[in-house]
Image 1 (cartoon, rainbow, N blue to C red):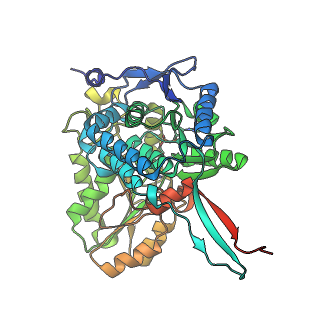
Image 2 (image 1 turned 30 degrees about the horizontal axis):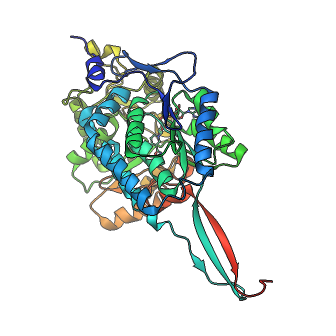
Image 3 (image 1 turned 90 degrees about the vertical axis):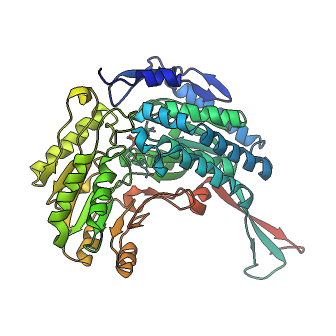
Length: 502
Ligand code: NAD
């Protein structure tokens, strides 16, 4: 029987999507429905009517009203904390269903849904973690600088209405990374998910409603970037933009922020290096090098380490081991527990990735395995086989641009200085790693490489650790203390204790 995901849609009860504005589920007023086609089969799964600018305007005005009337921002810390904890519980309790809807959205193999950074569990933990900030968002008391009878205080206040835009690849985690700190800080939110992963975000919104988030505090607008997204990022009623997605759209978000002098945070793409020294176990290192770009979302992750910098003394052996690892990947039905690797999100991305693979060969890299597409039952989907390029020069296009597909570029180096130079020779700076058993070398390299996160013999993301990019990989951080700061303003209050301050 040909591959189909429709029985899963029916079992999950997924119907057509609606917007959530001011506590009501409403249809978008877009004239044409957006049809969600599944990336593994290109079957039509479900649809929604997109939000037009008038719908976005209503959502922003609802968020604005709720923020400006002060009723949400002034919630007792105890109640706000409990609300965030309740959201965390509901996400955990409904975790299996959320993982399955995510797979119905973006084709991520269910076998991969237990990987922490894309799981429902990290989404629950991010809400739980931010519940812990609610009663700790304190200002300071400052000494008088010039003397005089006065006191200076700082107050931390919510930044206002937040316009959040997220991509399709990790909607559970990224929804939480935007919404949890915003609610913890006392902001109101209008969120636009990717048109390629809306249904899991609809379910998350239902859970927020069930948890008791007041009307107008969280609003969901569905639609495409150019229409719904533009209406949100340019709306004068939005105080802060928070965006995760591509560098190209990130630039547009920055322009819109500049136009309205809005606060802005950007989490963008990467071309992360993984530096491999000879003093490691080669089998497990090859598994993680190739696995990171070929398993799960097939390299469609912002911090996938897509440049492997391998010491010359182990280079040939590592190429052979990575090729063997690629052969172990199982592409197929993302709902089948045996499947390790999913499809590319859409036809445009399929064309882009195959274009980069062609360019790699044209520019002289050696294609070791992959580069082609599976046939049979998988031919109707957007699958590309795990692809390994050896003898890559860091100036080649496949070493410089984010491909967002299952493509590993392996680059040889001869010493630590050269490895650091190649690692830093990029416009990006999201993630990087080193594999070595020499602790001094590991820390030297960690200090020398310019990236927002760095892994030593392993890499993951945690709710309490800041995550974000150097260089063109972004602006600001999510997670940890630095993740909540961008949702706050600081007000300085001067108190004259005597007759006059002057
Ligand atoms: P994308 O930039 O195409 O789209 C992201 C979101 O922006 C979507 O919701 C889209 O509809 C919206 N959008 C597009 N044009 C817009 C506009 N003009 N105005 C407002 N919104 C607009 O990215 P994608 O394909 O969904 O996701 C892949 C990208 O996301 C990759 O570059 C990846 O590296 C990046 N990413 C980064 C992180 C991170 O934390 N740094 C995490 C995940 C993904």
